[in-house]
Each structure stands twice: as C-alpha cells, then as structure tokens.
Image (cartoon, rainbow, N blue to C red):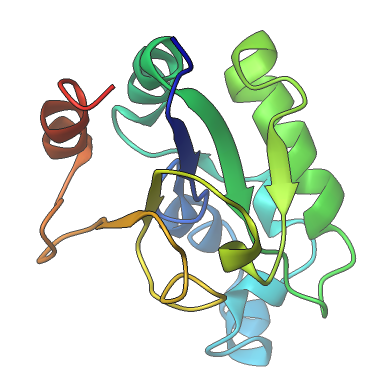
Length: 151
C-alpha cells in the first residue's frame, strides 16, 4: 500500500528559531529588526525544537515524509544552512527530502505541518495542520496523536 505524503516545515516546527536569535548581538538584531531570517548564518546556529527530531523520525516510518520550507531571498547563507541542518540533525532519515519553495501549494500531498498560512499554504490541496501555541496543534505530541491513525 502506498504511503500518504506528509510535508513538514522547518521554521518553528523542526527548528527552534528563537535559539538562533538569542546568539546575536543587540546591534545585529536592531539591524535586522522584524526580519531575523535574513541574518547571515542564523540557520547554522539554530537548535531543534523540543521533540521535533524524534517526532519526524516516527512520522517518517508512517508517511512518505518531506521537509518543505522557504528560504528568504535576502539571505545568501540560508539555503546551504538549511541543507546542513537537515544533514546534521536528521541525517539518513531525511536524506534528499528537503524541498525549498515559496509556493508550497505546488507540492501534492496529504498533510502539511506549518505554523503559518503563507507561501502557498492556504492553497495547499491537502490538510494543513496549523502548528504552534494557541493553534489546533500546539506541540509535537498533538501532531503525533492526530496523525498516528491516519497513515
């Protein structure tokens, strides 16, 4: 039987973006105010979000799982930093499963875990699992519980 397709965003889903922000000086943060994702090498410094790696690995056994993320045009380092992050933290589980696109709706699949509804998420044909505090899926445990019997 063919596995259902699951896409997982990186920023604030797999990655604790705040963990990278905290490493930069006030001057850098002021310079990139409201656009921290454009800080050079920020993605090379971020840590995994709590339970993200274990959850991704678990879901990869149940679904045909890909990482679907965007990369800011104004940050020349983020493309390679995201690739290196996936290699470092997810290794063979996610090998060659990173897709970078500003048009997530161009990818066909059953589920998309994302903390925003931008970059084509609103138009995604599958089910958007809105992730984050205050959302229907506030953490990885709620995602695992919901998806475990959907595979």
